[in-house]
Every structure is written in structure tokens, then in C-alpha cells.
Amino acid sequence: MSQVTKKEADAYDRVIDAANCISELLETSGIDIDEYDLEVLSIFIADNSHAVMQILKKQTKPCVI
Image (spheres, rainbow, N blue to C red):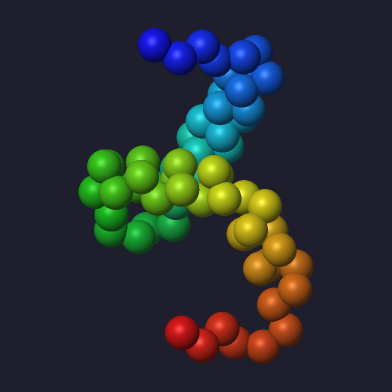
């Protein structure tokens, strides 16, 4: 069993707290998404918040995939 440092535990708690806020926001949007997918998406966005912020700050043209 691996040991988790206080710093790692605090970082994980921040991700979960952010994911809860993101879930609440998405629930108010009216998007039809099941509870499991909502949880997975919210955690993913929260866990990748730095990348999401960079995309939102620097987006000057439409993203083409």
C-alpha cells in the first residue's frame, strides 16, 4: 500500500472540491447527462484545470480537431 503525503492529499481534496462545483454548474445547464458521466467529466475538468484555463485564456480562434 502506498503512502500519501499531506500535500498529495490536499491536492486531491482540491480537485474533488472543484469537481463538485463543476458538477453543480453542469447540472444547472440543462445538459442531459447521466450521473456517472457527470462525475467523470467533472473530475476530468477539475484534474486538468490548468490546461482548461490555458485554453480559455489563449483561445483566439476556433479550435479545429
